[in-house]
Length: 80
Image 1: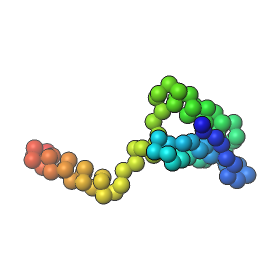
Image 2: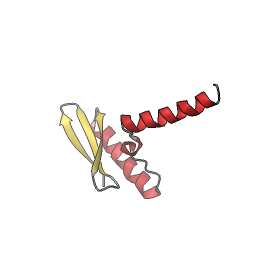
Image 3: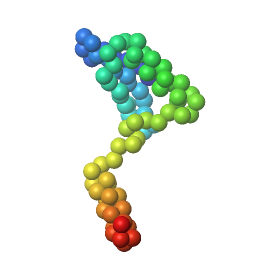
């Protein structure tokens, strides 16, 4: 279940459990209501099966370089 935490006088974040057993977060909410609304959206999306964890889209620089090099090699072979 997602929850909210106060970070400073005007800053809130949402924490949520990830599929791998760790915890993710989204920060930068100016109000408690905005953070609570986002936490509720996370939970609703999870129940619907439509939640996409933003952290799951991250890629290391090394992996990105490998993908980019392969794409460039293919493009060079097509004389683009």
